[in-house]
Length: 178
Picture 1 (cartoon, rainbow, N blue to C red):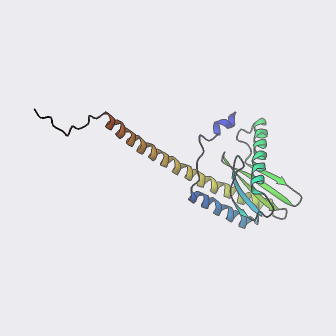
Picture 2: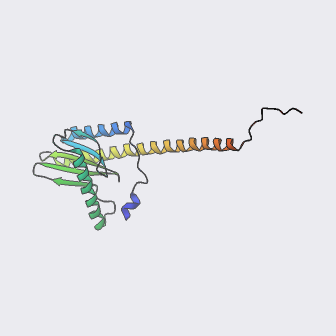
Picture 3: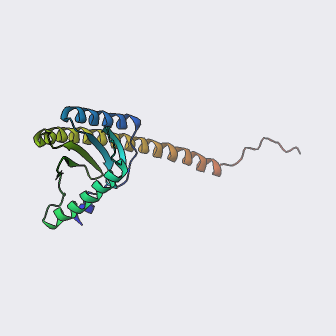
């Protein structure tokens, strides 16, 4: 249950600006590492954006399976006393590999790359990308909180005025003649 303490209090929407910034980070990651594909998805496995050429890879399935894999390894981590889960997972195939990164509690970054690409290079650039994306997400969440607070104040002000107006005596514009 330790992970539940770190769970997000609420979901937030990515702005177009944050989405574009994350897409740019993925493009830079893909170009710097010669990765075939970099996919950013939420912890439920819903793909958000990607860079590279998915070719015959179904992004929705890949993201969902990566999220399931990460959830399973998170539980394994908990069983051995790693309350925060594992930050990175490496899946080695015969010709291709997948490097899976935890981006905060809510998001995952999957990098598909050929066996010929050095794992050390993937690790270095993936670490950099995770830090950049985390910063973008932190900034986006703060902006959304500020917008919510502004709307709450604005709503409360309007509600207060409407409430006050409902208790005012109507002005009598007609005079009674005696």
